Image 1 (cartoon, rainbow, N blue to C red):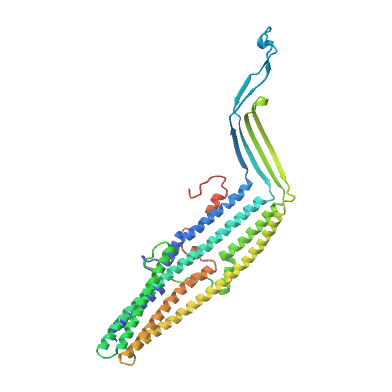
Image 2 (spheres, rainbow, N blue to C red):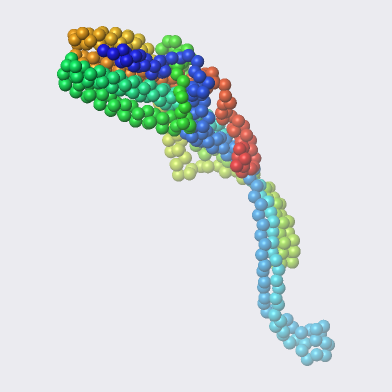
Length: 482
């Protein structure tokens, strides 16, 4: 059998090398760390969650507003017109001393117009409300902590997705190349089988078998191309740009714990989903205290300053100034029992959140245990498939030599070749799984982030926005200028 087939078979190793080689990539190639960076900066899902955190930050100044006075200015301005008839008597002074009109009644019409107006300022200050303001502030801060931990969950998810889609595209590109090389080999195999059929060395059945296997190989190429296109689309969705030439990916086992028990302990303590559950307990406990505050007295102080003009002409007062300070103490005695129900309801929520914390820790432990097993299996799978590939290569070469001397059939050669393709496909898949599992493990312990990966780019710090808005007294423009 021709040496051309053997030379083409050597090309099968190129695709496998592309996914497994961990040497320095070329400067023009897309790298796995670079793709993670791109996803961190531009992924819309991640940017959306950052906006959620910024919106949640505003809950703190809203709660702090309970400490601040409420100032209201008011003013009135109007026009009033009155008319009427009054009864008067002529007197000596009005009609003359000898006038016959003296003592006669007169009914003059009196009309008057005036402009009543006033301006004033009222200031209300809460002095005591059962510590509800302080508890609402602490609750709002717990809510911002929940949002930040949720952001960490989203960051881990996006980075893991980015690593997965990168390796998926690298795997699918390698598998597509394998299938294309396989078709080239099958074409050469068919050509040689036809030549042998012409000289009478094989039968028409051998030619048909070679043709059938070539048709199946071409169908596999079409399927691999479709899968590669899907992976490219997913890459574009997660990493926000079209892929270029991908450099090989490498596992990150060095960043993860070396023992399963250590990994479990870290996950139960530091995984962001556990952090969400822990701050959820704080939020619920503070809600109990807020509801209990409705049972305590409330003390408020109100001050009012008001200037009025032409508001009481019956007293001939053209101007009037009022100012007063009023303290109001309210002591709740019974409000229908709803406040007690709210307290009991909040306490039940605290119990639920504590159960949620146990659930989150158990889920983190189960996930770490699972991905640890997947990583170990992927390592073993690589060793097994490497041995499988080596054996399949030897077997194929031996079958080809035996077929040359008539000891093997064309079908034997085709089967041996397909076994080699399957072995190389399994090796590519195992190498893909090995890298993805290493990222899964780091995410499982809650430490899949850019600093841990050693990617030195400006990081999004949610505390920057929090500090900008926490003590703001007024203004509607957000820190980015909108």
